[in-house]
Image (cartoon, rainbow, N blue to C red; front, side, top):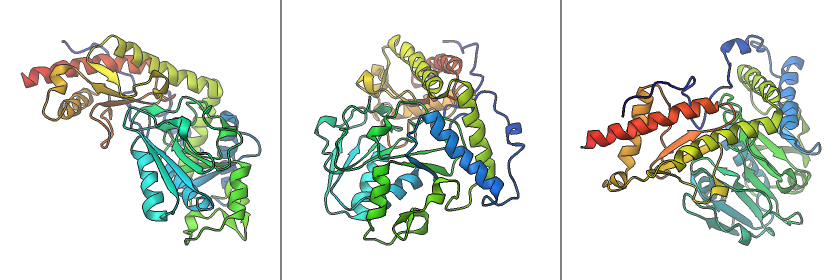
Length: 384
């Protein structure tokens, strides 16, 4: 097969940090509040604007608190686990590496005594019909490393006794999040809107706030995790008074991404762009016998972290099941500057992962796919 004639205009398909929005340039940061305190009125106003615009684009209920917190989504999830868990039993759901990380933290770090775990292999979801909502339930909405998402929130009852804690880092701004079903939601700036790393977001329902104000954890709480003082929520965290010093360059970039989100139609426009990217990949997969989605159920296919397996018999017959082939394919595509960072996550099954979030143009996805075909042919020729 000859090399394709066209390359993506933007070859960045990393699942985090993700592609910048179309038309982005460093010029959008020219008005960043540099050399000033983030605690100054102007700095706090910019941080508050990120919170307000995020709530608006996401359609978050007015009575939910939204705060900017340290250490990306990981910091936000850990803050939730350390601050909220303990008063009742916990059920952990895991079907990919990050969900498994939260399981390990709860079992090995917090060492909670009453924890049950529902797990599934990469490509599947656990049986959501048996989730026990008398417990606090911790889960990822979208498995970034498996390409498997929960299809909706219908499995979560309105009259649940426990809290639902949802890691939504590769779902927020790209999927419908039913806020009335979710008590804690976390994400990071580096995902769907293409922001820069280090900043996390945490959203709390009134039920979650009530838990925070009534529960004192049995373990010492690091300063970075503290959301209460004297038994009351620290409201400033949710008004732009961050716990640590944020990058005002990143803040300016986040504001630019949110403004772009509004320009493309808000949440509906963002979801439509991402779902269009998944459709482009699905059309290509349907035309090939040698590739398939890692997500076995089409209703659970992620429209952001699109994970694929190479299943041609000559690939799966390799001693390592095709792992080296998949890595070589990703490397060849990258060498041609036709698609960067498309190898599967290190702990996931061998294959490819293409970020399809809203900042990625469908035309770039469509230009990438023939290069994967070309690279597979090249590797087959190399192997003889």
